Amino acid sequence: MKITSVTGIALRVPCAPIADALSTSTARQALLVRIDTDAGLFGIGEAFSFGAPLAAMKAILEAQLAPSLIGEDPQDIERIWQTLYWRTIANGRRSLTMACISGVDIALWDLMGKACRMPVCRLLGAYSDRVPSYASGGFYAPGKDLDGLRREIEGYLSRGYRDAKIKIGRTMDRPGAPLSYMANRDWAVTPEEDFRRVAAAKELLGDGLLIVDTNASWDSYIALSRGRELARLGVEWLEEPIPFEDLEGYTRISRELPQLRIIGCETQQGADNFATMIRSDALDIAQPDAGWVGGISETLKIGAVAKAAGRKISLHCFGSSVLFAASLQVAAAMSNTERIESEENPNPLKTDLVRTPFETDEHMSFLVPQGEGLGIELDWDKVSDFTVEV
Ligand SMILES: [Mg+2]
Image 1 (cartoon, rainbow, N blue to C red):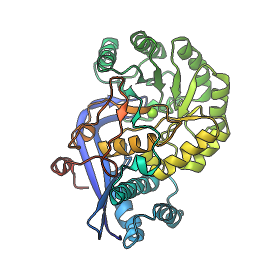
Image 2 (cartoon, helix red, strand yellow):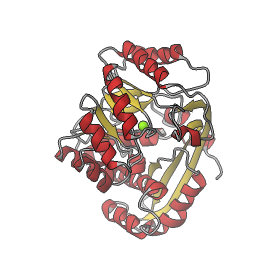
Image 3 (cartoon, rainbow, N blue to C red):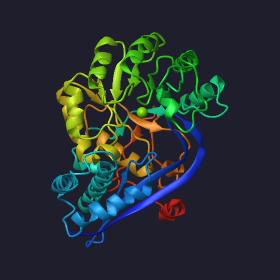
């Protein structure tokens, strides 16, 4: 089997505005990667693209990576990964190049599954047929007050979720607050209002797990002072409190806030970078995004590094149904998987692209799709509806 073409499919759909500590979204987007072969089989993957120019990603994929893929045997996944990494090392390594390599890697695993007529999870040596999840939401939005947050979480609980994540940290309370650099600084709150949001969420969740996410908007001093109050309010996981570049800060936070599990970093890439963070006691739970970190192949390595260090893994996932399916397949193959992020903001790219919706059990564990490859069948009419020229 030989690869005959590599195509980037840019998807975008407007959405009601939502914001985390820093970024505001008014549209959802995805870069799908389609790899066709001379055997008539194709694979589909997704490069995580939050806020990125899709035109740049499509150019990296089609102009920079594709020439190294045409004519190759798509089943040589590790060799192809290393080839793409080394051929782009002068300007790649991280960011959009690694995201595109991730999308290629996922598409190659999808192809492998289709060639072997097995779901990717079984190819990888399945550990479970389902993956526990938490509802991921709790964003800031125009007009959304404490009652709005409560209604959102009540909705999750009514569907069977026990655990949830909310955003915190959208504050302008200090000079140089990262939010001050953002184009949209609306819907900011005070730290006290954030604590009230956290308390309201915990009151509803009861014994359920409450995760809070600052999207790296704090520094280690703020994390240490506010983290104690978060723990007192019943928060259990603190997600990406500071930028990953501050490795010593992460280590301090992890050691000095033993009440909290420090989880991250969706923005970090590469198994070697995660290995450094884990060796430095920076993270209690590794949280890579398969569409950003280097694909299914790199996610598996991070899972193994975490396992060897006695740590759990909980995949970040904020994309289309392609990335969610890939994340489920690899998460279910790792015995140290804790939970997977189940993003619940309205997103047609996650809910409308697949012919069969993702299934859960009554506790909102997601059943791993058992079809070939990623296990999903895309509705190509819907893909066309959401495709944009870039
Ligand atoms: Mg996050």
